[in-house]
Length: 430
Image (cartoon, rainbow, N blue to C red; front, side, top):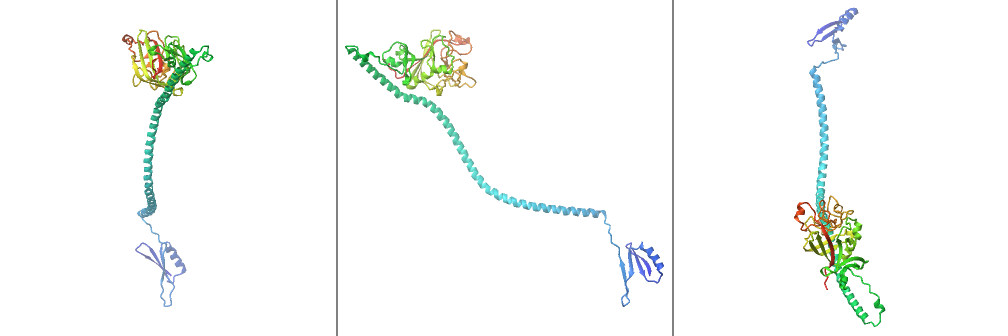
């Protein structure tokens, strides 16, 4: 067999084998030479019956070397596929979110109706809150009015008692007169007449109506309570006055505790405070007129009279009611908006009920009184024998005509004597 070499245009070497009768040795030589150079082998195939012999072509594995740009293109395609997959995922996610949004929108639409009703409820709550606020204010005002009306109610309820007591005292006087006449008709000493009839009066006016005209210490029992001694003035303005307070000297200190002012202290013949509990009993059962008498060290005397005077009980801190001024000393109890002693509570050094926010007026002015914040009058201040300087802690009446020389020199006016007296407003001089 003979081997022929054929060179194709594509740069491939084709080897053709023919049976030429060469020796085996020469063929092997030729095969060895060509084997290394042939890429395609062409050799005769088996012959058919009609003697047509074909050729068999052996092709090597085909390897194509792509340029560098082709690799970049492949990488770009991969990235594009990846990006497409990402977009698809995002699209699917967006579709899911869209469905959720539709569901949420539906819920929001439903909830808007609830919110509308909620807003209506809020409006109702606001209206109710306003009503509650108004009710609270009304309640506070009602409490204040109740406190004021309590005093009036006591006075109104006691007015009938007052009239009844006047009637009883009048009847007692008639009975006593009858008894005296009968005693005078007895030929022998009457055993019954020899025993004096025990008499109990509400205040000093009762003794006046019984014919007593001598000033001094008597026992009274206001409201039919336990009796206690008082000083009765039977001389001034017809008599029948019960003295609540007197200042004549320095023998008694008025810088006292709450308990002292409650029970009373001092000497009924000189300087004393009758006691808040007793003053309450006196002014609770009857409508009383209060008379205040003042005298300074220059001998000037003035007075202030009030047609309505009442103090509440201890549970209400002996709240003061004082109205209807008449007199010559000036109305120091209603001096101004900031210094008004009407409807004020009693304060002492150890019990602060005043309206002064920064301290205790009773401790500062060393006395017990119906302080505001703090005062335009204080009849329980320290007793001075002459004008003084410093804190105005002495007896004080804010409308007093103080000499200008004292004011210019910074002195405080001093008082020689002070008294507070009460008598029933229905009192009639006999």
